[in-house]
Image 1 (cartoon, each protein chain N blue to C red):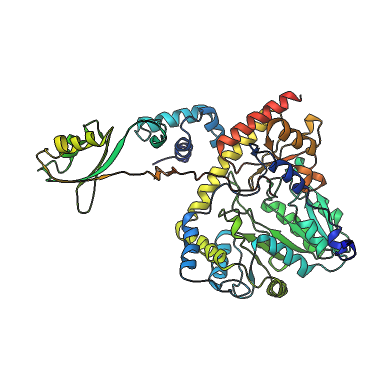
Image 2 (image 1 turned 90 degrees about the vertical axis):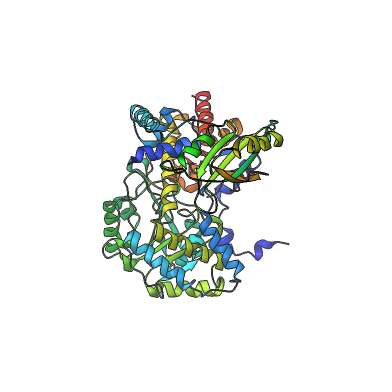
Length: 164
Length: 393
C-alpha cells in the first residue's frame, strides 16, 4: 500500500525530478525528514528506479532510428516466455520488452543509430534466436506523445494575463 | 455626438473595473509571469471535451429547454445532494445559466427593487456591487479583515443591516481572499439572516476547491436556510471549464421562475455543447468518484502550501487561505499601497499580481496572487518577489 505522502511525492517527482526535498516538504505539509525517508523507501521498494530527463531526440542532431518489433516465439517448458524475453532484453539495442496478449507474443522496442544497424540487429541477432518463429518490424516515423508528455508545442497558456 | 444624452445613467455611473486598467498594463509586457489570472491552469479533462465533440458530430446544434437540458439538471440535482446535502427538484428549482455570472445577475434582477440595500462582504469578486447597481439596488460593503481570516462576522453584518436591507451575497470560498466559512460561521450568519428576514445569494463557485481537511458547507444546508437561499455554482473552477460558460442557480421555485423569465427573454438558453460537456463532467464524476476534480485539487493544494510558505519566509503577513486558488498576503510592511506595489512589481520584476483594492476598499494593503500556475513559474515569480521586497526594505 502506498501512503498519501508517497503518492504526492510521485506526482511531484514525475513533473520535476529535481524538486528539492525542502520544496516537497512544504508542498506536502510534511517535514524534510519525513519526505527524505519516504523517497528512500520508494527507491528501496524499486518504485522509483531512476531520475532521468525526458529528451526530445528529434531536436538534437543525434542520428537515431527506433522500431517496434512484434516477435512470435515458441514458449519453453517451465520457463514460459521469460527465458526468451531475457535473451532479447540483454541486447543493448533493446530499450523495452513487453509480453503481449493478441496475435504476437513479445513487443520489442529497439533503438539504433542507422537503419542499416537496425536491420542488422533484426536479421543477425533477433531472428536467428532458436525460439523466435517470426518478426514484423515497424519503424517510428514521428513521436507525438510519450509518458504523458506531448511533444508538439501544446503548453501555450491561453489564459488572459489578468482576470477577475 | 454627445452620447451621454443617450446612455443609461445608472450604468454609466458605475466606474470600469479596476482590474481592467491593470490588465492593459500587464498585457503590454511580454515575458511577465502572471499570478493575476482567475482561472485554472488545467484544460478541461479530455473525456469531457470528447462528449461535446461527439455531440457536434451527432448534429446536436439546436436550442435546449430554457432551463437547460433536463439530463444536466438531473445530474446537478444528484451532484448537489451527493456532495452538499442539498435537495432541489430538477424540473422547477434548477436553472442552467451562462456561467455563474449570469446566475448572479439574474438573481439580483429578480430580487432587487429600486433602493433595496444588498450586503456584500468586502473584499469580494468584482461583479457583485455593479450587478446590484444595474438592478437598481444599493450595494453595502460589509468589512472582513485578516484578523478574522476574512470570514464574515455576524456582529459586523448586523451593524450593516437597515430597514432597507433585503439581500446578502455570500461568496465563499472567497475570491480574492481564499477565505472559507465553517459551519459555525454560517450558523451565526443564518441567525442574522433569520432575525432580519433577509434572502441570501450564496455564490459557491469554488466549492470543490477547499483544502487541508476542511470541507465546503453549503449555506442552504443550514437549518431553515434552503427557503431563503439561491445557491449558485458552475463548472468553471472545479472542472476547469471557464471558457464553456456553464453555471446554474438553484432555489425556491417561485424565485427560479422569475429568474427564468429574464433568462428566456434575454438569453434563451446556455450554449448546448457547454451543457452537454457539463452533464458529462457530472456523470463521469459520479462514476469515478470525481477523480479529475480530486487530482486537480491535490495539485492546487501543493502549490498553495508552496506560495503561503514562501510569502511568510519573505516576511509578509499572510493568513492561511483554505479555499479557491488565491493567496492574499498583506504588503503593508512595505509602506506601499496595493496599486503601487503591483505596478512596481510588474515594472521592476515582471511579475503580475492583482491589487487587493480592486476587490473593494477592505482589500487595500493586500495583493491577490493566484497559484493556479505551473510550479516552475511560481518558483521564479516567488524568487523575483523576494528580490523586490529586499530592494524595497
